[in-house]
Length: 283
Length: 262
Image (cartoon, rainbow over all chains, first blue to last red; front, side):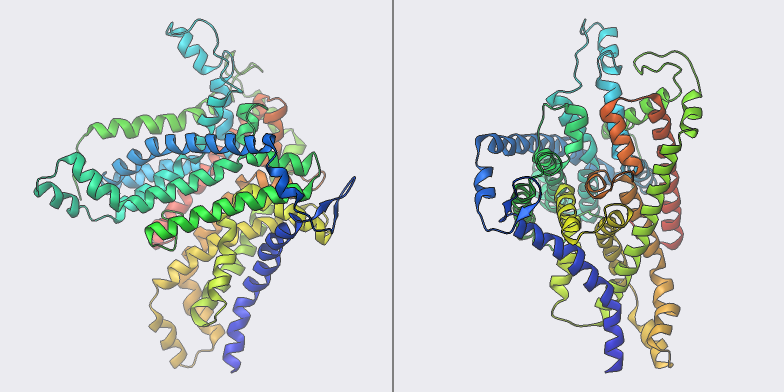
C-alpha cells in the first residue's frame, strides 16, 4: 500500500489548495449572504434574510434588468458577428486558418484595458469617429458617444467577441462537412442545408459562445465604468459599490450568490441541451 | 486541403479583423503624438516613451505584475500538473467533486471571485498585498493548467510508463523520466496562458490588492478613470508588443512539439 500513499501525495496540493481557496471562499460567500451587516464596519454573525429581500427593492431589480438587457444586446450582436466569422474561418485553407488564429490571439492576449482605451480614442468628442463622420459630411457636430449606452455595448462586444469566434470555429472544425454535401445532394437548398445540418451540428459551439459571453458581460464593471461613465450600472458595478464604497459585505455576497446561481443554471442547461461535459472552445 | 480561392466571405473576415485591430492601431499611433491631447495630431515624438521610462511608479507596477504572473503560474503549474497526473492514477470517489471545484474559478464571473476572495481573505486576516494577489491568481490559473495537462495525458500512450515500471523504475523516476518530458509542452503553454491571464486581470486584482501594491492593469485602470496622458499610450504600445511576442513564442512552441493550445 506504500505506492498508493505516494500517489495521494500527488493530489495533496490540489486538494488542499482547492478546498482552502476555492471551496472555502465560496462557502463563506454563501454564509455571509445570510449574515447581518454591522453598524459601521464588518459583519455580525446573526442569521437574516434581509440581504435577499433587499435585492427586490426596485433600484436593485432595475440594475439586474438593465444588466440583463445589456448582456442580451451584447450577446446577440456577438452571435451575429462572431458566428459567421467562426464559420467562414473554418472554411479557409489550413495555412490561412493558422494565420487568422494568430491574428486573433494577439488582441486576445493583450490587456483588455488597452483595447478599451482604443475605443475611448475613437468615441470621445472630436475623436476618430467624429472626425470621420464630420469629414464625410454625415454629421456636423461631435456625436459625444463616449459615456453612452451604445459605447458600453461596443466595448462588451469587442471584449468578448473572440470567445464566440473560437467556440464556433472549434465546433465547425469538428463538423463532418460531408453531411452538408449529402443534404445538398439530396436536394436541400443551401439555406435549408445550413439550418438543418450545419447550425444543428455547430449548436454546442454557438451555445458555449453564448455562455462565455453572456456570463462575463453581467460582471465586467470596468467596461461600463470606462466607456459608460456612471450612466450604465451593471450587477458587477453594484457588487463593487456595495463592497468598496458601502462596505456592505453581506449584501454584496447575496448579489454574488444570485449571479452565481444564474451562471450555474445556464451552464447546467447547456450540458443538458448539448449532452456534453465541457464548454466548447474554452481552451 | 481546399484551394484558397477568393470568396465574398473573405471580405467579411477582413473587415471584422480590421475592426478588431483598429483600436489597437490608434493606441499605437497616438503614442507617438507630440500633443498631450489625443484628438489633435501635433507631429511625431518619442517624448512619451522618455517620460514612461522615467516613471518609477510604473516600473514598480510592471515588476509587481511580472512577479505576480510568474509566481501564480508556477504555483498553478505544480498544483495543476500533479493533480492531473494524480487523477489518472488514483481512483477515488471524490474525483468528480474535486474536478468540479477546481474548475469553478474558470466558470465563475470574475466579479464573484473578486468578491469572495476579498471577503474570505479579510475573514482569515491575511494582509492584503502580494500574498493575497498570488493566492487569488493561482486559483484562477489552476483550471487552465489542469485542463491542458489532462488533455495531454489522455492522448499519451500508457504503455510507456508501464514499460518503465516493469523495468524497475520507481514512481518518481517514471514521473521525471517519462511523464514529465511528455507533458512538458502542455505545462509550458498552460503557464503562458496563466501568465497572460494574470497579467491582464483587473477585477480580481483591484479587490485583493493592498495599499500601495499596484499591478500594471490597476495602474492603467486608474489612469483611464482619472485622465489619460499619452504616456499610457506608450505603455500600452509596449505591452501590445510584449503580447504579440508571447503569442508568437507560444505558437512556435506549439508547432514544434505538436501539442499544447489549439
